[in-house]
Image (tube, rainbow, N blue to C red):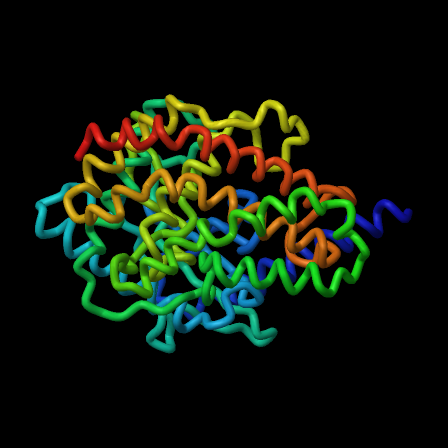
Length: 377
């Protein structure tokens, strides 16, 4: 009897959820009859659903925007509209075929914007589903090269955007701010954890001055901020059924930043022998073949607009991002694990040691990276 009640309750909740989603969809300019709504993917930040229509070739993606992370939703969607509009214009001028597969398209709501707010203060948006496309999680040299070209081309197409974009997460990749946050956490030591991580603290603070080079160059006027993706992972690209790259997706973090963000963070996430939370610290290290293939693809395209200063400091970028992520993981560990989701008490500590090991290996490979990059100059 209890089981039957539970099933009925679950069905009732599912029906209520479907009705709520239908009510949200009504606010968007979708002319086709809606035939189904199903969960899509396993995104941690946005709740995502695929919308089926009577026109079987036309589907949509409904997403709830997490405004706890992206607090200014209007700015977020304004950035995305500028970026997708600019890319679409570039593709049209280039005579590109299948533009609908090579650029995300967001649907306007009845308020004239590309989002709406429900009666529970949740924000939602809808984009056109790109048929016959998929994402990847595994990486090899071919995929890495493709990613280098795609993310390089993404920056290149946006290098002449005239409209001003805002920071969807203010100071997201500002290493000076991240170090200050770590120092504040150390002083407070609210969980009494600093004593157990003093070796990591000493290394990070000893290297802090040299790792803040990007901000120093920026203040001198030697380094510029460009429109960057700021979350360059292999699974933030779509591929077609023939394994050809289609477009860059997940545009929430697109904002002004140093190009180091896109170059360095891809290598951090994709060129490590193990995952970022692997406890096998001895296995951490730079995959040279992934570094080389990504760098080749990236410079082939981005080399059209990068300055000598930007190219010269790509090895610095490769070291900066595991360093920065180590700072962020350690700060969260010292503060009591309040930001990143953890599965066990020392999860953030393991992540910190992992990223510190990767940072050290990037430093050890600096000469190799410099010599390889110089081949393309």
